[in-house]
Length: 390
Image (tube, rainbow, N blue to C red; front, side):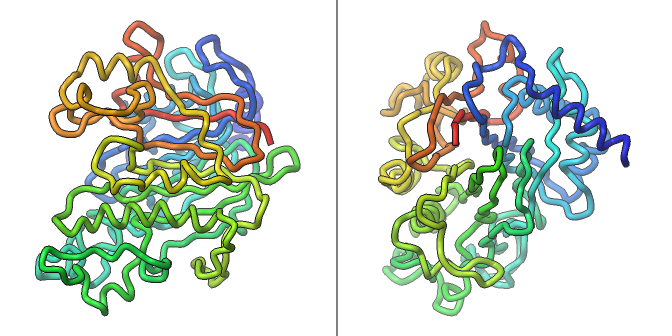
């Protein structure tokens, strides 16, 4: 154990070096990456982490070694309480050079259970019977599917973290309760009264950055699709995003109660970064209009730095289809979907609070003639990074 710790500390020191093909570092680098592991059974990710030879994890490790974020949120990284995922990822993948890159280590991590795959005992999808992935608190085939993992080179106050898995949707003021085609509420009153808002979880974890504190607000709201005319997933996505607007806003959000019973939002003036796959594009896609604008337009959030990449522009041009009819700037896309129906979208965000000095941002999506291009199809999302100074 002591030998492993010494190895990780040494790698943490190496992680401060700068490979030639790394995006120019200009401050603390925070990243978010929906790795879209797409695993169908419990324990599959644990097997891949233990083996040390999973091709997707090898490419994930190379991307992290190239971009070298100080803090990174991984979405769709299954939660399995039986294994220490961070230690396995560090030791079996990140500690080894991938594609000629310098190893990197994250000595600190955070994860908790998520709502995905946890049976509600209710008929949430309206098929007439309880049970199955559509009747979990968050869509999932097994508990922990589509989970989250936060990795950090800086200390995290895990014991002080606030989580909101059990926060009820109906407790959000003016909640967007889905309405069926007949004009009646899609969810019966007894279901609506207990239905959880977060499809995975909402986390508020603080990190110590050179004696200063930064709140990392992490989540992964449901995709606004795979439903019916009631648009229950679209409405939930909208309100999952609004949760952070209320939590970070000047109103105090006394109605928000965390899983430990503490009420209220973030203290005024506290620096934060909201991170994750928000599943909402500012102009295109299927999210409820204005969903992401709730955060992009908030006066206390600095959304001016729009991450972009040459690879996204190139992909939209080459793939055509729906991309040719979209309104948004293709350079800002962070996800590559079926070009017949959805096209490429901006879904992944890092949104800092006003007062943090933003020094740069970008998307790891190299063009076809650039180093690292062969790594991007490891997921249908791309890693997004943000450089800030506290």
